[in-house]
Image 1 (cartoon, one colour):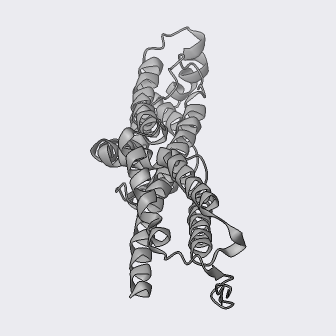
Image 2 (cartoon, one colour):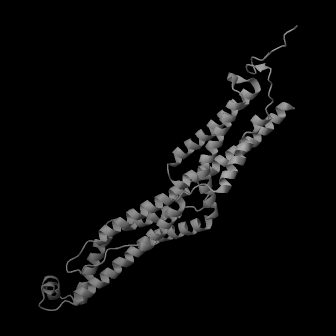
Image 3 (spheres, rainbow, N blue to C red):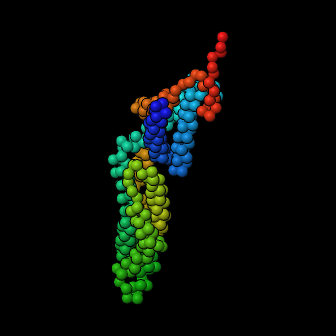
Length: 304
């Protein structure tokens, strides 16, 4: 009967520990303080240390192992409580993610949409710039240096000034788009379509990082291309996409801002500690026992 009670307590303790550890683990991932692999190692170490300490407490109470008295056992229990209170920071963080899940999903979706539209926005920028360049070529006056250098000779070959402007605009378009832009755009579309949105997905924080860093690198690349100037082209503004940075920054700030543990998180840590300590609480204390289960000695009272 005592053995069944002991095992039942361990079931409750294990469930409480695994649940609390998993929620804290998710909070650690969302904080982005360390990689996914390191977060997993921290969670495993956290669980292993608490189980190890709890085993010491139970063994010491049942067998007076290492002659660890009640004060020593309580001290170990306080160490377990400290571990849980420290992890309550990340427990609170993920509970906040759960509370803000609608905002996270919405911002992430908007960020992905911005990323998908980036190539189209740059092509629109290029088209507008080419139209402006065509207008510049068409507007060149006879006798000006630009007219002499760029229009006079093609005109002598029978081309109209409009067709000349279209030819130069086409060259400018190729100049601004760079090489392999169509292939890169297709790869980006496929990659972005694979992104799934749910706060319970342990890859979501990494996806947020990847999308943000990747699209910012695409923005930098387009920015460099757009800074190139063609002959007689006026100083055209550099390509930028502020909407992506705004949504990405808001999303990143929402997911990585860690706040002090809430009162409820601290209370849950204390309750969880009490449940985890159930195996120790229900362990029978045999004051006559010395040694362990394999070397069990009973002290008999001395005869008069």
